[in-house]
Structure formats: structure tokens, C-alpha cells
Length: 629
Image (cartoon, rainbow, N blue to C red):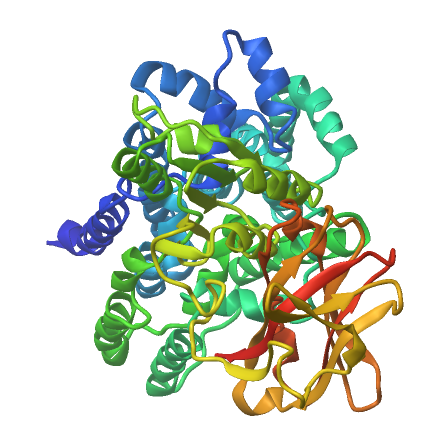
């Protein structure tokens, strides 16, 4: 019975952790990072793998080398690739429970273990084949042996070797897991007994020796820098936002956890004393955070929620170590479990969310639409880091990409040229990474109708456009609410809402149009006040018809906002050359810049043609609309 009481809580937590991690783990699309790693496995030798698969990535070689040999044995399927990480995620929960029980007792370990098992943070990265949950597993394994070497009088030589191996595994896994075990090693110097100092130092020497072959790779990674090109510097409240993120991005769930801890202490009328294990847990968590925060501001932004997973258990230890073992805590554990399980903040809602960009669903629609309409009628356009990420899921189906965009602004010229020349009647456009949203505007200038559109949490999107069938979407796939039309001008009325020279209104084939020429640098001006704060405007749409005798080069349609002081707070321009690739034809134009950050105050809206090179063009049916949330 004593053994049952000892091991039953761990067994229950193990079952819970296993169920939530195995459930659906291979059914959702591989992420961008996972597909990048798989792409970098296609080499014939270990040396090629290091040069082409490791040095270019910026992470230590451990996980990539492991996947190189693992996939040779078990294949490249999501089931095979993710399985080791699911298992390491489960065993991380087990190790977290064991360490918490050693350091703080059975009840705090039960609470911390349950949280580790069910919080989305640890579940998500247990289902992703990247060096996050593996790093957490290696760190907890190292802490287990480190604790035995430092505090438990375990066999010196054996535990020195095991601790050293644990250090090395974490060092080869990720540079933040490297940092974590480095901090752990420094902390231990303040606690290790004299008779264990040399075995303790031996563990560090073993780790250094094992990592020596990797030093040239690490130096190369330092020379190429980190992810500062796309990752911003953390704000001063980053750590508080991270605490909320850890608890399923729910302030309520964090609050409930803290209230439960406080309730057990109040019932016991006692606050547990501070121990060395509180010092170790807080030092690990805070030191890694402070170093990551400082490095992000002084050198290169590297701090992310994902990189803090390596010290995630120690945060839970600090919170739940104060839970007192009493009647209240024995009942409140069920309340915590309920909140961790049920919606809206529990793990059951986790499986319905889109956590990363979608590649499998996008691939399926490429196949479906090309098969349904015929690949000779569909132009396939893709924004992606590498086409392999989509082709991975083609499974023998042949779909050719007519245009692949990688995120460079100059590609918009190539895109508009292609759209003007293609003979296809439909365009299948997919975005699997952030890119200039004006791509949708350019496509709709040539293919104004939409047959089908699928959005994956706005992380990925695929749309089938057409010239002749489908429907017109009021808003460019952001918020499809009915717009407020601020102005519509076909230049046939005597009363104009635009600041224009009426002498430039001309008759073309029986209809009126406005001629923009060399007389004015700024033309077709609209200026008006709109209370953005009252409705939360997030998009301005400008539409019209354009005719030019030859392709334009510099003329631009501009939308700007100014505040009460006359300061320009927003400016966005759309080159009209993208809509002038078919001279001697009237061409649809549309420009829909997002203005989310402008929704808190009243601004003056200005729309105009900036004719920088005194080019000649005709405009007709010009409308300006505002879209709300």
C-alpha cells in the first residue's frame, strides 16, 4: 500500500501526459521549422549534413544529426519524425515530477507535474520535432544526476560521468539549453561539498571535451548572427506576458493557480520556508531570462517563448512549491485539473487551434483545384521559404508552380508581369509565411473574383481567383464587414468630393473619365475626417479603373493619415505600374492598406495620385471605403 501511494500519483500523471501528447500528434501539418529540418536531411554523407544542414541553421548539430540517422531507419513521415519528441515530452513530465518531489515534497510535485502534463506550452513542443522538448528532457535528466552528485551522496564517478553526459547532450541540443546547464553548473559550485568538488569538476570537463568538435560550428553560427532580422527586441513587460503565455495565454488560469496556492497556505496558517531548492529554481529561471533579455537588447534578439521552455519546470516549481499538504490541497488539485482540461482555457481546446503555418491543407487544395479545373487553366503561385514544404505532401501528385515568391518586394514586379501575360483563367495563390498583403490587391486587379478561400488562422492561406466566375469579396481577406463608402466618383456628376481640376474630365467612348497628366504632381486628392476610434477601422480600400497608353513607371496611389497636430502617422503607397501591364485596356485597380494601429483616435484621411514622373493616365469609377472590425 505504501508503494501504491508513492507511485500512483506519478502513474496517473504519466497516463495523462501520454494521452494528451499522443493524441493527434501526427495528424496536423508539419511546421515550417520541421519541414526546414527535413529538407536539410537530404544529404549522402555526414560531412555534407554538417555543411549544408547544420551550419546554415544556427542551432547546434545534435537534433539534426539525430534526425539524419533516425529518418534513415524509420522514414520521413510526421509519425516517425515526431515520435521521439513525443516520448521525450512524456518523460520530461516524469522527471519534473521526480525532481519536484525530491526538492519540495509530494504535494507540490503533484501540482507541478499535473501542470507540466496539461499546460499547452509543454504539450505543443512535445508534438514538434524541433530542439525544444528534447532540450527540456536533457536538462531535467541532467538535473536529476546533478542533484544526485551534489546533494545525494550518490556514487561520485558514476554520477560525474552521467552529469557530464547530460551537460553535453543539452549543449549539443540548443544554445539556450547550453546556457541553462552552464548556469546550473555555476550554481552547483556554491553547494557542492569539498569531498565532491573534483568529481563535480570532472563532469564539467567531460562536457567540454565532448563539445570540442562542435566549437568550429558554434563559431560559424556566431559569425552569421541570430534571428534578429525578424525577431524584435523584447519589451520591458516581456516576462509578465511570458507568464500568461505559459498558462495557456490565460490570465484567469494563472490567477486560479496562484489563488489555489494561497488558499492552501491560508488554511494551514503557515507559509513554507525558503530553501536552497527555491534559490536554485529561481536562479535558473531568472538568470536564463536576464541573459536572454540582455543579449537580445545588446547584441541580437533571441529571446522567445520557445527558448524559455528549458527553464519552464523551474517556474512551476517556484509557484507550486508553496502548496501545503492538507485537506484543502487534496481537493483543490481536482479544481486545477478541471481548469487545465476543460474549455475555454483547458487543453481540450488546444487541438482545435492553428498553432503554426499550414502546409498539408494547402498542398491538398493545390492538388484538388488543379485536378478539378485542369492544370492548364490554373496558375499556381506560392509564397514560401522553399517549395519542398508543399511538395512534401504531394505524394506523387504532379502540381507545377508557375511563380514562387520568397518575400522580396521586387518580386511584385515579376508577379504583375506574369498575371498580365498569363492565358490561364484562374489563379491559385497560397501564402505560407508573412508577405506583403498588397499581393492580394495585385492579383485581384487581373482576377477580381474568388471561387474559394481557405484561411488557417491567418498563418497560412490559399485562395482560388478567377476572371469570370466566383464572387467579389468586399474586403481583402481580413475583415469582411460592410464598408462605409466615403466617396464614389464616376466623374459624371457636377458635385465632386475630390479636389480636382474639372477641365481634366474627358469623354472617352461615351463615358467620362479623369485625365491625370503633367500639370500636377499630386492629383485626384481626397481629404476628409473619419472617426476611426468609434468603429475600430482596420482597413481602407481604394478601387477604380485605370487606362494608360503605355506601362507606367513611377505613378503611385497613396493613402495617408494625419493626426490633429497635422503630423503624418500613416503612409502607404501602391505603384500603379502593377496595374498597367496591359496598355490600351481598362484595368481594375485596388489598394487596401491595413491600418490596425490607427483605430484609437480621430485622424484625417488623405488619398491621392502621386505622379512623380508626370505620366499620363485615365482614372474612372474611383471609390474610397473604410472597413471596421
